[in-house]
Image (tube, rainbow, N blue to C red; front, top):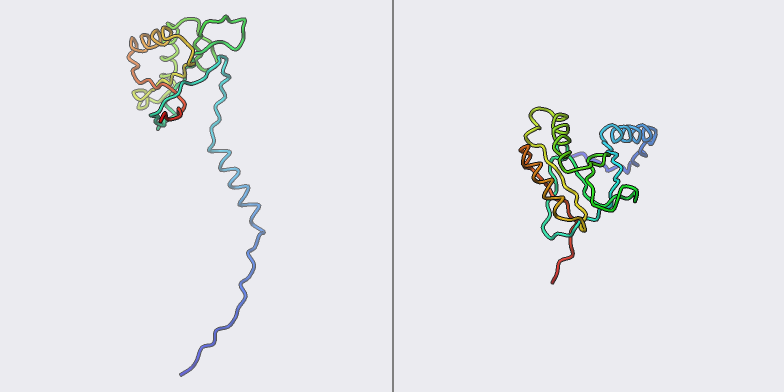
Length: 154
């Protein structure tokens, strides 16, 4: 019988000539797929703490409302509502804003439209109640309240 000898072959070095191409393809991929939202928050916002939190599953159908005290003292000291980059003067303006936001979505996503309320922990409940009333009147009942994870009390 013939015997086969194991030859000690050295493996060739990995070619790094195509490495820059791969890096640029990855960079280009992430530049194309990343969506940056630029919202200038004009109100101070410190989220309240909560122990049971859930992540938003479909962020593309979520519109954010900020409720807090204005950073610019010229705008007063009362809590204000910010929708996108615009400060609303009264809670009844929320209704028109929601209708505009819903119209930006595709028809099949309009039923899933969700309002994310980011309310400052020191804001009065009355303004939140007014917003909820306006949302109820236009049948926009999907509302999320944002919070930070609180330290568990033991």
